Image (cartoon, rainbow, N blue to C red; front, side, top):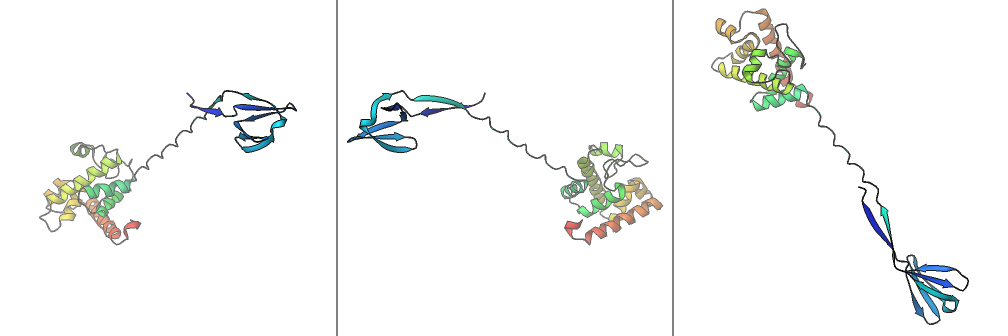
Length: 215
């Protein structure tokens, strides 16, 4: 329902002149031979002799409809985070330098959420379906995929923390699986895995050498 407000007209008197002209006023005062008339716009004085009669009325109430209020402008929808932003968040949550996750994601999927490898690895961090289930994440959701990849890498780094080539083993296990690292007691002699580790570390050192805002 449209809201209303009441407007009162205080022109409660009419001064009828001998000429037949009528003046609507709020009230009048007798000042000697003159009448002082009070109106919404000010005061005026006229000779009493020019007045034939004074008529009094009840104040008139006029009800006007207020215009309906304009609808509030909708708040802008929050901007969706990019894959890189999700990766940085996941790195911070798991105590990892963001450059290592960014490097892995670039080599794995070029930051593409819909990337699918020939072996069935899914999304930005290229999680295998079984790995994603074990991590309890949805690999098709970029945030969850990033968090799952970060947890997986963190666990691998912890698994190999007693080895001097800890990072090499963790990256090899991320690519080829912990079984291959265990079998060869280090980086497996797979050309793909060795090239993968080299590419990830090259990208990592490149990012570390940049200013934070340009990463």
